[in-house]
Image (tube, rainbow, N blue to C red; front, side, top):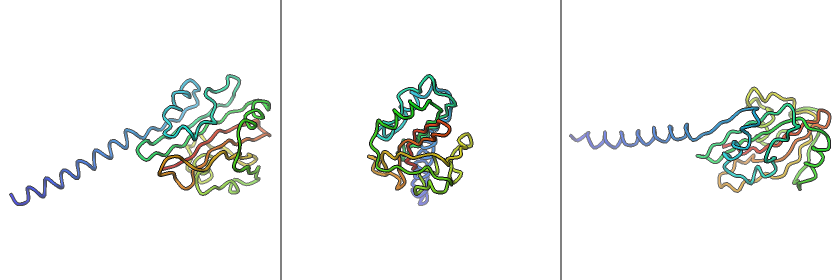
Length: 180
């Protein structure tokens, strides 16, 4: 009888812990796809829309080699969003002109030169964190950094979002990285 109260407290704590783990696993939404038809819907899962304002609302119909990745965690507020495709030079030029940038970097000849305290590791696979489908040689990309702060209270120190362009391959990447 004297241990019953203790067992009830321990059981309650374990139950709360298990519920939290299950909630976290269910609410962490990870989407990887190259199907443009789900792109618009996937953008709605991003917790902080201000970090993806520069992303196109729809993928241009003339875009080729489309790949996007979205990992959104509503529990901790982290989002990693990545859209890559090939487009003509005029499309890329017009996109670059649309925004003000806090920093423009590159193009660099080695992927290690793109390091930015971790945020780019998730997007450009610098440290092997990105999904295998995202194996891309980031060298020769010029980075147009739009912002590196989040409105979310627990923004990872390496939060960054912007556009990357490889003029040699006519590839444009929209990215937002705020890992939790």
